[in-house]
Image 1 (cartoon, rainbow, N blue to C red):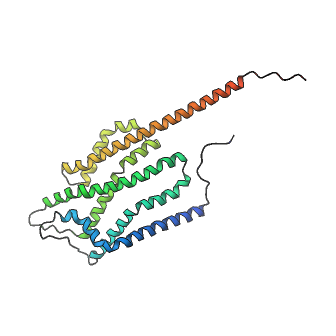
Image 2 (cartoon, helix red, strand yellow; image 1 turned 45 degrees about the vertical axis):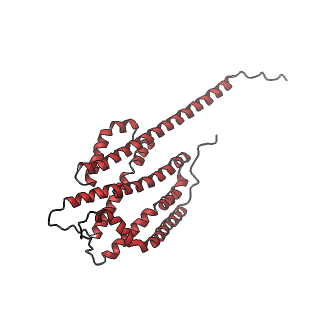
Image 3 (cartoon, rainbow, N blue to C red; image 1 turned 60 degrees about the horizontal axis):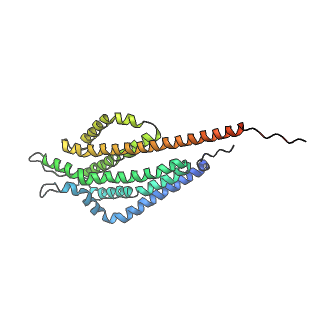
Length: 277
């Protein structure tokens, strides 16, 4: 009997895999460099935009400083390169998908594309949340607690490292729905277990909020509540996917049982007598 189960595409030799991987990496590098070339002219403007949340809370007459000799050039250069990487992320993920897709089954491909798109949008959403919501509150708090007689003059290099870390942290934090969905869909943990663990998840969200935000309840809640809601979203979609998979498996089992019953009935039917010679 021929196996009708869909299999991944035919395997390629190792050298062919390495060649394809090299070509896709080169495409990613070229795309990032092209974006960087288009943005480099605006490097100073990009840095001014990223620094705006802090500069809005600097005392009158205060400015940011550059303590390194090459910092006025290297810091905007580094920021523009990172922005190019972030903007090129959809292309990078598309190349990753093109490399791994031939080795996936059809039902895996069906779920992978929405997950990739969701991951990109959620990561960008986390960065936007950090810039428009968290940064103004955080820098306003820092400015309000500056001791009297201390001039608030932030180094541009240290500021860039600080905000890039927070951009990455919030982008990853907003991937909670994808991580929750995958844990349920793969079968590492079931929905009931996650629901029972909800109190611990909420506490964990507030702990993360305490680490990533200023030490006030409002700022911590501002991050913890969205993280908790994102967890609930992932839990909801994971439960829906699990129910759908169980329904499909049950339908397939019923169909197989019906086919087996029909075949057994056919075998039990009396055979017509053989013709007389």
